[in-house]
Length: 285
Image 1 (spheres, rainbow, N blue to C red):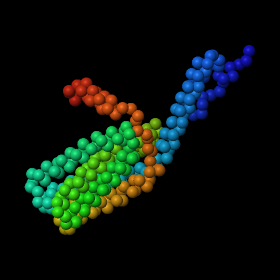
Image 2: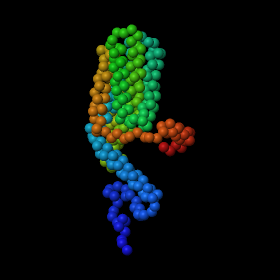
Image 3: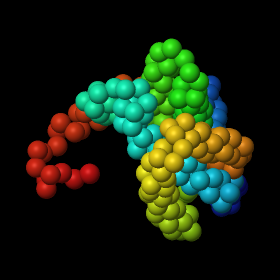
Image 4: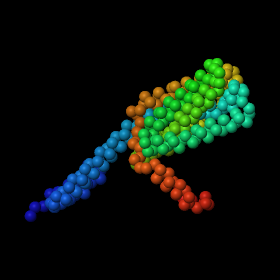
């Protein structure tokens, strides 16, 4: 009798070996074999695609994420540091109302983060949400700049519209930038695992540098020039950051969004949170 012809040989190059099936059987078995062949081919193509994307993540792309994150932080904290002054000194609102608007702006920004996360994870992907959010953030700052420069009747309404647009854009960026940065590394590679730890330290540092620069320089610009100078500087920062992030799109790993139902994921999160013990010492994350 002949030796096992199909059983010889090693696994399929470098990946998981496909299971070997005996020939023969009826039409139903043949159809099942074809379906399994297609499934294994699909897995191989998906693995090659992800591997190719991870290998294409360059240091230029990772560096641009750090720069973009710092410029986003400068713009966000720059607005926060002068918003009270703009509403009080620029538009004559009371201390209480100006404080309320400042808190509402920050609160609305973080509420919009829920929208950005849902769009990124389940619909259009992180890269598109970050890019669109950056564009909206820039447009909102430009609207605020125009409202402080041009003398218009009821210019404060234009200013509030600019705040709304900027909060919407920034809110969409906030939850995605760190997750998108994590996509640029493959934890199965020892070098990438080490680089990722270092990178996130720099990412956190870039946020702190941006907040320090904005919080220190924005009041100085208001004191020595005017409010419009701050919005002009913040707009210039994003005018550099957003195109830079877009132009290096080929240097990023852009993983596809999840095709699962987003509301089921949200329900699962709340279910798991409610099922945990009320004591923080008993929680195991």
